[in-house]
Length: 166
Image (cartoon, rainbow, N blue to C red; front, side):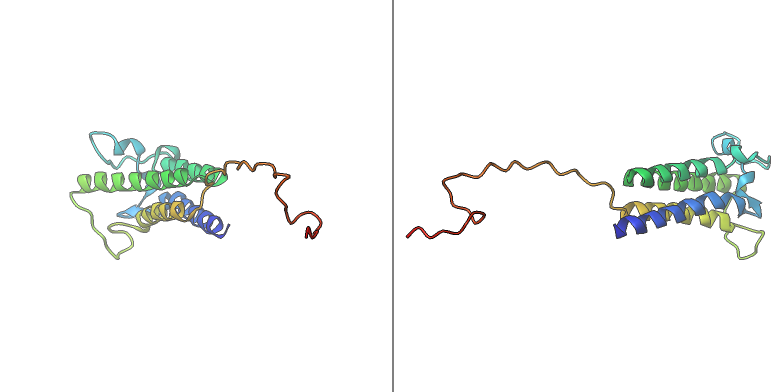
């Protein structure tokens, strides 16, 4: 019970971090909700064309949050792990595509230059979702009923009255 509670809290925290990440700066001060989802899969790579909210990185992270909720309701470790893989997969794909477009990725302490906190939130949220899938206990296997033969009347048991047969 404690493992499921702790795993559920971790899963909800990871999903929240993933959904919140597109509203933070990802790279050079540009928010994740401004990166088009189609740019990750196109030959042209990441462009400066802004995206609508549900055509941006927000969409796969909301999908992962819904998979997380379904996993928690069904007590499925596999679904929570799948949500973590979705978040990490899109984050790494974004990192690769932006690295290709920019030539290199820069980690900087300046607020509007280099990788921003949104990237860290998405990556951390995916890792926390994977950790939650390990911590969750899940449903477990159902126990098969065990056949217990009826008692043999010739064998004395301790259930009946105590009599001395001497």
